[in-house]
Image (tube, rainbow, N blue to C red):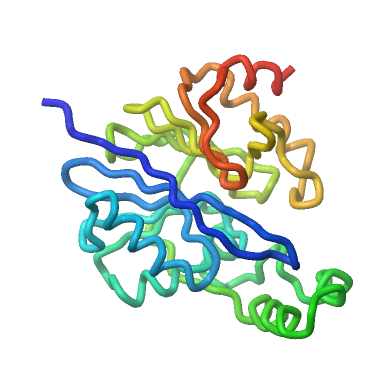
Amino acid sequence: MKANTGVKMIPLQGEAFGKPMVIYPTLLWDDDRAVLVDTGMPGSWEIIRQEMSRAGIPPERLKAIILTHQDLDHIGSLPEIVRELGGQVEIYAHELDQPYIEGTRPLLKADPKNMAPLLAMLPEKEREYLQWLCENPPKAMVHKTLADAEILPYCGGIRIIHTPGHTPGHISLYVQDSKTLIAGDAMVYMNEALRGPIPQNTLDMEMAVNSLKKFENLEITSIICYHGGMCQNNVQEQLYALLR
């Protein structure tokens, strides 16, 4: 008997470097468990919990958190969730981003020295907070590392796609049951169009563009981009055009 599965984007509104921002963690679930993909900025857990409740998913059903990569807006609420749910939740990430998420290495894009010119442009209160956040980033233990082409037995099967470039350990997820691609920051969705990775936020642009080729042979009905939300219009055509 086929499990009942679901996919829900969780829009989180906020501000980044003086500009409004909406980001989209994703909630997946089946009859037995729920899985959260990425956790938003620090302080987002309460909103995520409310959105889970609206979907009929109580917090105690959350059994796994999959992190697409190490950036602050993806790992931000991880410590809050771990504090509340303790040993109930396992944290998954690619091994190349694991030490940054666990705090044994400084986040690649949150070095206060490198960010000094950008921080100087912000209002004092926001500048002080971001300075503190870069010096004291969220962190938590990664229980299981993920490899390219691995399939997690949750929610009808979640295939791991290693898509490095944005960060070394960036991953995307293909939810086999719903044919949904969770792209993380491998792509963005702007003005009803899929776009490639954003150069100013990508560590290795050539590698990030090459990573998109891994989506070519997937049967996809919808793509969730962390920045921009869900694309469902002419998905395959847009993706092929992007690859060309």
